[in-house]
Amino acid sequence: MTIPAQFALFLRRIPLRWILAIPFLLQIFLAVGGVGYLSYRNGQSAVETLADQLLDETSDRILEQLQAYTAIPPLAVQMNADMLQTGQLNPDDLETWRSHLVQQSQWFDELTYIYFGGDRGTYVEIHRTPQNTFEFTLKDRPNALAEIYQRQNDQWQLQRRRSTEILERPWFRGAIAHRQPRWTKPYKFESDPPVLGISFARPFYDRNYELVGVLGADFTLEAIAEFLQQLPVSQSGTTFIINRDGEIVSSSIDPDAENTETTTSEFTSPLINATKAQIQQQFPNFAQIKQRKHFSFRYQNTRQRVQILPFPNENGLDWLIVAAIPETAFMGQIHQQARITFVLCLIALAIATATGLLTARWLSRPLQDLTSAAEAISAGHLDRQVNAPPTLELRRLAQSFNAMAFQLQESFNLLEDRVEMRTAELKAEKDKSEELLLNILPAAIAERLKEDSDAIAENFDEVTILFADIVGFTPLSARLQPIQLVNLLNDIFSAFDNLVEKYNLEKIKTIGDAYMVAAGLPTPRPDHADAIADMALEMQIAVDRFQTQHNENLQIRIGINTGVAIAGVIGKKKFIYDLWGDAVNIASRMESSGQPGSIQVTAATYECLKNRYVFVERGMINVKGKGEMMTYWLQDKL
Image (cartoon, rainbow, N blue to C red):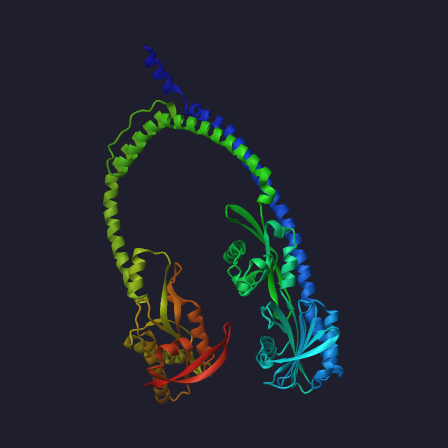
């Protein structure tokens, strides 16, 4: 026997486990890479912990400072309210306010303005200027020039100039509207130059609960910004305060670098804008942030660690404290070690890859033959056979494969007859299923379900939904027998079904004595609102006719809304074509908040129909879950 023949015989006797043992040795090198990765991750985790501790300390300092700032205006306002209550201050004697406000402004040097506005347009105010001097403003009647006394060298010098009427100022209108103490949003003070600040205002009422005036105190946001700039984290990162509406209240940006004519929501710092965008991405609804939050993001190839701390305050002041710091301040040495570990892992990976490729190539040839034979058998060539591979395990696999192919060929002929018989049975069952499906669902939806049994959901930009409820049905159900009640309800809903067919609408479902129908789906149509309005008017006629015929006291309450909805079929059993979305909920609210015998529609439906139908404005109503909404009564068609 020649040497090549002896070698081939040797290869045939080599077990597969020996061949597979060689790649396992390379796991040592992969373990090195795993250890390096874990080392890097542990270092990064330690850095995140250190960064979070620094951010916690920074946020807590900001929180304490804000609590100190925001506690002063309510205290000053409360003092003035108590003095008004006890008669120490007279709302009609404006001159007596000057000495009191000057003294109070000296007590609270953090406050920029302290003031009182009367309900008849009178006004007194003390203003601490940036030069640490005082201006006292007095206005004893509306539309009069304001008397402004500037204190210089212990003397008061009088000036007169026109100013905004007190009744038009935001803090006055806000306090009156809410009828309770409240913070305003940041706005520009009437100063030279204009500065941003916030006001705390409180309405004051006499014993008869009649409005006497509004007390208030202000401070500028510059002091907060100066405090933020002095924080250590602001040297490498940034800190800022944002309200729940996404407007930036103050930041650690140097005011000289910003345009002072912009509002608080127009800061141009790229880092602040990037951080704010990430917060909006992480938390689309700022109202959900109830406790301290941490997250990271990449900005200009640098990983930033961010912390958000809520600053809830009473009377409408609800801010978020944000601090961000780059991890490069901590990660320098860790990144150097990570690069060395990464190079070593690449070397180990290269060795493992080369060895694995050589081993795979040796094993791939017989496996490719087995794969080709399997593909041939799956294509119907059951007589395909494979040659014996060189290794013992693969040779046994090839023999088992050939035996399996032979058995498959023997079984295939027997199965063909059974498949044909079963196919005929399945076709009959399929015809029954299609007939049942068309009786339950719209034809377009049924066609889609025949192609794909998964959930079907489509978004429709404009649909009109109608909810109707039979008023007086509950007392009737207590008086009639069940079968009489069902027959009665069937007569009414059958009349409604005829209207659905008449106007080519889509009946969604009935629940008890409630009826739901929609227009504009599953096939969109431009006259969806008109079709629903016509049906609603005819439903009233049908119910009136039914009362006359059966001598029953029944009325119908109808609600209509137009908007965006999602329609489709979900679930696997007892499915129906249904609607979801805010527009559906509002339509249901229109029905439940309506009146018997009336059709209540939303402003969206009114805009679609106002030129072709007769409406009566109902006005603003409180809709559950939506707040105040304007609604209308649909009366008739023009």
